[in-house]
Length: 321
Ligand code: NDP
Ligand code: GDR
Image 1 (cartoon, rainbow, N blue to C red):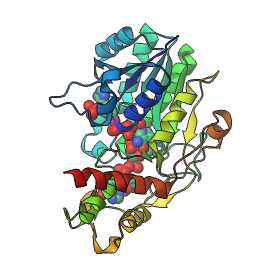
Image 2 (cartoon, protein in one colour):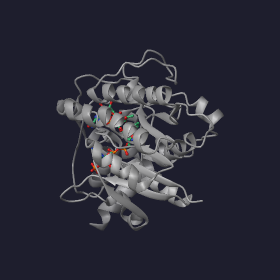
Image 3 (cartoon, helix red, strand yellow):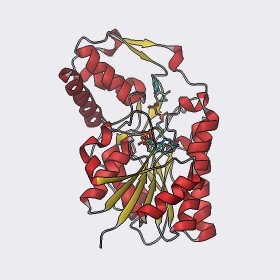
Image 4 (cartoon, protein in one colour):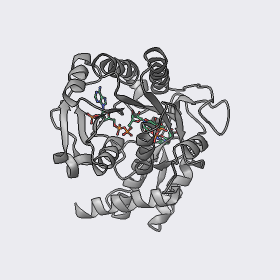
């Protein structure tokens, strides 16, 4: 029997990879999409005819209830959020409404309309923030460092709470940074790979950056959406950390990206205080051994391969223009 899945955040990076995966598996895929004057469909252009879109917004409870009624989902993947950490200081209340309360809105829509649907919440390594232990795992206490991180902690605990209060099959995936050629342009990996491509092609002459010392555990989004699906196929709902177990500085990222096109990053990178955050997450390094053991999840793309894949994709994109 065909399974129905509802994905919020379908136009984003993860929404697009997850939709591809579920379509491959024979799911009927519904995507919750916000109304915008100019729809942003770049990530899902190639599969848009296979997805049934439902207009809705995490801030509008009625629209979520009707989305559940229309899609009658077996599985709900709640990926929508205000997801850019830097913006969360500029728009903290909106971030709280979408990234925190939006999760309750979605959980309640499921509880009231289709309580046996399985629910995935997109939790984040940003919840570990000023880390209290390394590597970070499922039991590591949270210490968020941004309004985004604070909102994600709320989203995480409300998911756990609905599981425990209403016996819902609700899981939270604590995913560390994951990237791809479809990553939004303002996130550091894509900003770097896009600018490196532009510099190589003579379209730009510098890269303005913030803190080069921050360390992140970067993986490939295509690998990480597989873990989301696996979590909802288990007998019991549980939370899992998904990470590579390797950490790299932003400086290493910059070095690999420029090195891939035969340039020295020191000739192009300018530090601009505008990109330094009010509070930083200095180090993230995840331990995904629980997911490897219980879900059989494994990593396929490593750090250097990922950065090179993104640079190559941006070179191709800009060469066409
Ligand atoms: P993106 O920023 O690429 O996508 C976010 C999606 O949310 C977009 O489709 C956006 O729609 C949608 N959205 C934003 N606000 C609303 C709203 N109020 N109502 C409905 N939809 C909304 O994020 P990613 O794909 O990278 O991440 C997916 C999820 O995983 C997010 O929740 C993120 O916080 C979380 N996460 C991401 C990680 C990563 O490294 N990528 C790591 C850990 C967690 P629109 O196109 O209209 O803006
Ligand atoms: P992050 O991702 O905050 O980890 O959140 P981002 O790529 O924005 O920043 C990573 C690190 O790079 C440093 N940095 C810069 N960042 C940006 N964006 N631009 C710069 O110019 C720059 N210079 C240095 C940052 O200070 C930071 O330390 C991402 C998002 O996808 C979240 O939604 C998700 O939950 C987490 O990853 C896990």
